Image 1 (cartoon, rainbow, N blue to C red):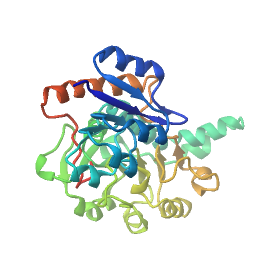
Image 2: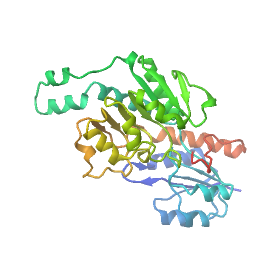
Image 3: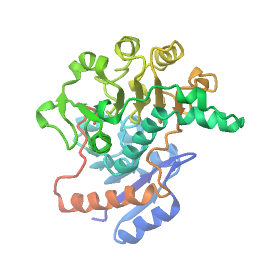
Image 4: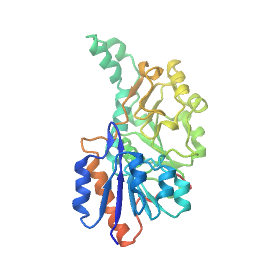
Length: 327
């Protein structure tokens, strides 16, 4: 029986699979029926008889019409656009693309951290007005890397790389993971459970969020947690916007309760033009571009094709998502 693959990755302006990558799929899979759709309505029409769906989202009515579907793969890491419970109930495999872009995302986290530590946003603003702000910037206290305590929440592919990079700079790194018994990745001195977060925050100089968004991690950093942190501490979020109470974060930054924040993700994207986070001098915002290197899609499609070979051989798929856990 001919394998039927429906591709539905079309979230403008940037999360849209280029036609050249669809052509790659067709060349790599000459014996498969590949249908590239660019709307939810077209996906609904194409899904009957499909064996595989390569997509970033799936509506409930489309899943109901999928009479032969056995596997859904998303080109993203997050699976919030998929009805995981319903997919799990039907025994349909779900996989994601975690780890595919781990290196650039981890590099981005370190870049945000160093930029804030060295006051580069302030320097850019001074440069824009041709101001030689040596006196203002020279009075800032920047702790040595060897005395900087980094806490990475989430020690998956991205978090582990962040930890390794921070340790290579001489920083002391601890981590939080769902299963501390899995041990410490390279560069991590101590591993803790999520319940220990309040105990760790007072000694943390840089908090890096690299965890998936689940019921357990949703708004894990709010007013209570921010109040536990040092006034000089930095928050770096390259995970999901829903992990942070952004209103509480803005208050903490405005009142000097927190030293700064580097945000590549926010709860609602794009960030509202009226958000106070835009104008705070100690905030560095990038528009969810940590994974971009100039060729986002080639490695994503490479990973999918590799997993498709496993699917056809009926061997265990890489990056299986547990519907109960949400990652």
